[in-house]
Amino acid sequence: MTVPRRRRPRPRTPPLLPRDQRETAFTSILAALVARVPGARAAALVDRDGETVDYSGEMDSYDVRLAAAHWRLVLDELRRQEALRSVRWVILRGGRTSYLVHELPEEYALVVVLARAAGFFGWRRAVAACAWALGDEAGWTWAGVRWFPAQVTADARRRPSLLRIGGHLGPVEILGTMAGGLGRREHGWRVRLHTGVEATLVREPGGVWYSDEPLENTHPEAATPRARKKSR
Image (tube, rainbow, N blue to C red):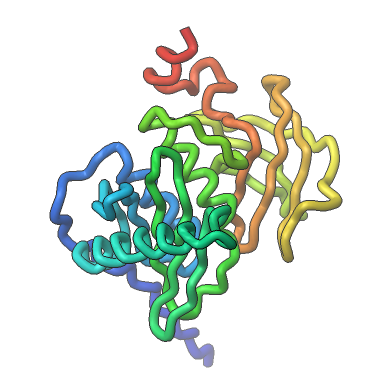
């Protein structure tokens, strides 16, 4: 007699709490950041006065706004001290909740609320990608290191095999592997796309991929109407 195996219950997706403001062009960018940072619960874009411009996540909107305003002020206070004027980001581990505060252009800041058990890894490229996308939407000039989310299909050896650009899936030719500049359990490759464009692809723990090149417009049919307008 064969005893049927018990199926494991599927993880439940936390219900989205009602928003207290309309979504903006920044909402989906912040949502992508929350999805890519391990342990992230919410993210907020906050201005110099501590006002939340937009946010995304599974937390109550009041709690997100309060955290954003508080840690925006903390970042300002830190930078008023002579020894800390060059501070650009701060990580704080709390008893119940942890926080990541990152400076942005035009005196804006990005505040990420994380679960207590968050390991503070996998956020640097995610924040860089978020900052670039926010700046592209707002018209800022982002001078930091640029990384861009990538949709990669890996082969049996977990190397990049296919890359999706817009709605197009194309092959990837591996030119070499990265020997340095990577964190623990990270892997990187220099690749050439079928269009001839070369880029560096990095796979972070958990299977999250990034490219050091903006690949959205490398396929002539993959560019969005806004991107095509910019390229003219």
